[in-house]
Amino acid sequence: MRALKDYSLKEWAAAEPLFHRLRRARNVLVDRAYRRRTAPGQAELVARLRASEAPALAFTIAFNLPEAIALLADGMARFTPGIPLVVCDNSSQPEARAAIAALCAARGLAYCPLPPSPFKGGRNGSRSHGVALNWVLHSLIRPVAPKVFALLDHDLVPLASVDLPGLVAHQPTYGMVRQGERFGGWYLWPGYSVFDLDALGHLPLDFGTDTPLTLDTGGQNWGVLYRTLDLARLERATTRTAWIADPVTGTPEPYLLADGWLHVGGAGHRGGGAQALATVRAAYDADPEGLLARLLETATD
Image (cartoon, rainbow, N blue to C red; front, side, top):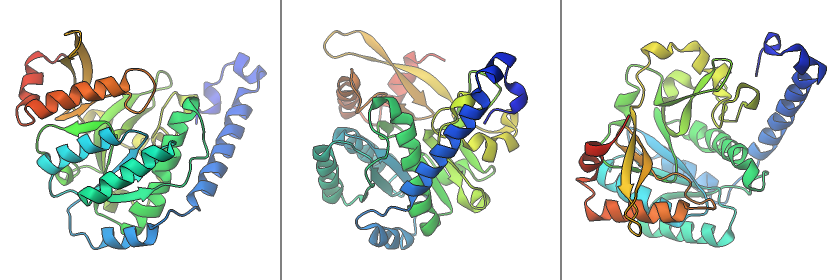
């Protein structure tokens, strides 16, 4: 939340500090109510994950696109075979949930159908994502208590081997930094971030948005965690813009490359998300081992 001193006289006159705090209180109540809900097979999944001897667990929030989960799972099976992928399904479409559940069953992936989101519609995507992440944190991650856990966007794919536990061997968290537009706050994008739960388990982590600070999903952790860290000394993901030609037009299109992870962007949402995913899938299938090197040849900072 913004400090009261950061509000202008005009904002005070419009009662914005009160409005922001009331909205935050409402969001906390919604989050806590949702957190108390259970998912089918939740207890069995927690027991399965507890029995894992993997050095880390990776969690992704699925949303309406089985093809994205298939690509992420393919990439992790190739480049991070020792890290189990836990698919937490926040899809709003019943047919997508059924398809993702079937895909996970066929591949032996851990699957959790999240309770229906309290937020509906495209305008609430960030809040829905944050509430889902908080449910996963409190209902799966904390009960399982892995030493290290990663949060991965569903339309992300690794293109090279990565040591996820090694990224937090000397610091409590690692990922892609995003900064607010005002007030100096920052956060790690929950689409690519790694956490040492042993170091952070005592903190009331919160992956909700902090709209008054212009921080998107994960921004509530600014006040909980990130403001205590020295950003200048924190090792963080290297980001570049990778270019992949559209197979129909031949026009190079931009994609985010965070370390060795390629982000499709917008998958599962209206617009060109599905086409972008098909483009990335074709490029990946053509040469999964060599795609990263080819992308780095033309990548821009």
